[in-house]
Image (tube, rainbow, N blue to C red; front, side):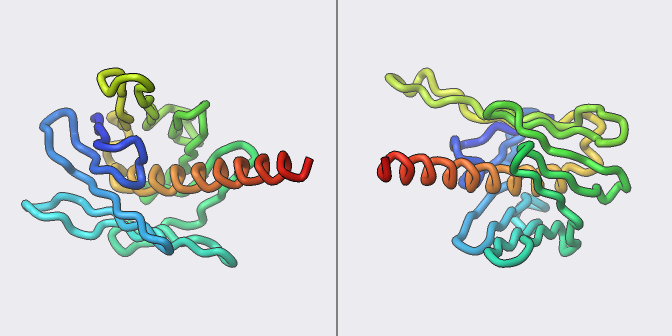
Length: 172
């Protein structure tokens, strides 16, 4: 299963299935939280809430059930979490893309291709795509939720690195 995004930023996108053209997920980012809506029976219903905290752990809930523990490693660019199916999973950054593997079998379950923006022409734009392998369909909603969370954490890390580099250059 593949999802095409309508925006380069996964935190501002609608995720549309390439199989049937249905815009299945919609992400709304707010300052203190992120909401993910799923298209069910002709309407969008709240599926995921991601609470973002400064002084304690963030909270990711899918259909009212919290995914925990979530182990974040900024050093290795990864997020590890237990799936509701009982298996451990790990998102890992691969350049500007992400890969999700079942941490027991090491089989790839999902892959995110960041795409790219055209510099001189919008015809060269390639919007992001999220591919879910057959084995991942049983935890599809968790994959989308943890993917959005991984995207947020990666953007935060990149912004912190950029801010640090600018501050360092200004001090020099």
